[in-house]
Length: 499
Image (tube, rainbow, N blue to C red):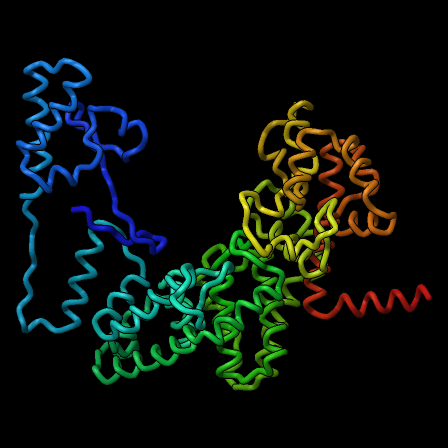
């Protein structure tokens, strides 16, 4: 009845549905339904007034456009009558006696709501929170909304362009901190006060477990912690959510940050560097893309039982070293770059590396970092993904399949006006024009950061892709080494040898 609903993006919006009585069809209102007299543009009108009045108004409007015969009148009246009859549709009401306890209420609620949609474990836990700690669930929802929308006044706020978690994602962070669990399947029972060894339930145990969750959630929603963690994400080269391939990696990195800060007491500078490296590694390798709960569970067990900050950092560093081996950089990563996935983790890691290494956009004097984080947002993104071998040019060569034209090795970042100007020009024709903007040293640096092999503009397309992939992998590696403090040492050593 014209009441707004809360959408998935936490915006309130009134849903309008159009109806065609002649065909018995419903539709989402648009310019077409507005123009056609056959449509009732908003069915809420049918429910808010007498059906006879609705039928009369509809027929009067339809007769202004064409003749309406008796059969149509009867059909229209019948269809509108059936629609209006939905107001009298019987619903089953389940009435609980006063003797029903909170656990029974929560269990019934979950069972009924799971009929139309298969609920996941976080839905069960959030439902239980509604019974025993409704304020906690409300806090999660309000925090989630505030990451997307400005709050009144100029005070502290979780609003940001990098990570806008759903309430269940924030819950997962809290659960990981409180119970060191990545899988949520047992957490529902734990929060109900079940002893997993004996199978017995206890009110005291339930209160204790909720107390642990409350303490953990206070850390998760602490705005100082939140803002500091987002700066860690930025320091890892990731400046916007559109360039983050796995929110699961952010969830676990935030867990690690909070655990390292509040439980192990890791020195702040060391902690931030450690988490930034871990995030870069986990996003690059897609560590939490497949079976994330199992991976969470495994990685949480890596943390030492002692509260020794050095051991905490060592545990994470050992995983990084075991994952990012020389073989990974030289063999595995170039193979992973042989894909056309538009949101591939290795592609976004390449962008992050360009940010970390303070590289400029191709053909530009401006840094990638500045263009990814502009002072204002216009109709065009300041930085666009550019096909080095333009798609239209490739089509002229008989290469038109997206899996070929949209190869990661055919992408780089340019300013939007350069992207527009290049259009479908052949690389050998546009490259000299743009190369003239720069000195030889600038051009060499640009080719290094954008992984362009010598004479690339004259190579056959497939040879170009093969030659560029290991060069992109090298740039991504330099991004990681920059985070690890390795690249600076290597550069200084090379400079000394040159002198």
